[in-house]
Image (cartoon, rainbow, N blue to C red; front, side, top):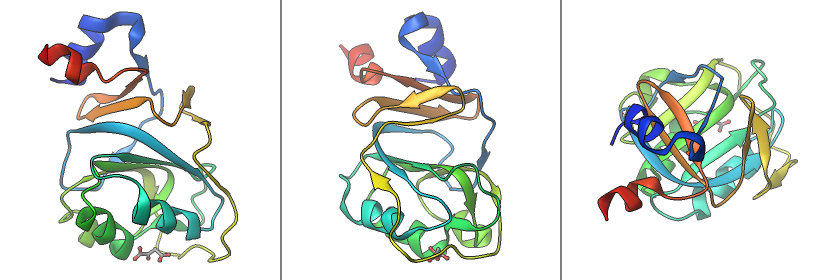
Length: 162
Ligand SMILES: O=C([O-])CC(=O)C(=O)O
């Protein structure tokens, strides 16, 4: 089911992310339960989360919108693919774009930056984060495709299958 259909069918149950992302991963259509990290120009917790959240999940990374460095590159994207994550949404930047485009998951980010991030381990995990005029709560569901990104408290794809 496409995000447009979810918006038509579920109206106010669906909330729209008002930020425009660029798609870097191979999968343009992805969805799953939200897990979060909040970091600033430091990606240690991003790697921790990619290493431990469940298969099928979407990692939502609030990087404060920084364009000064990349929070995800080819190594972390390959790890996320290997672990079977559905996708990653980065409110910040990625790098190694030529590698990301071969990774079989969704990767959305504000842009790309060749500079690596710090390795200090600052930030928080599994907290509600805010960007794109939305609160991204762990356990809510996100649905992304070429039309945009929407979230819902429920897994609307399960419901539509009933
Ligand atoms: O390690 C980093 O900072 C991110 C990166 O370049 C990668 O995932 O390959």
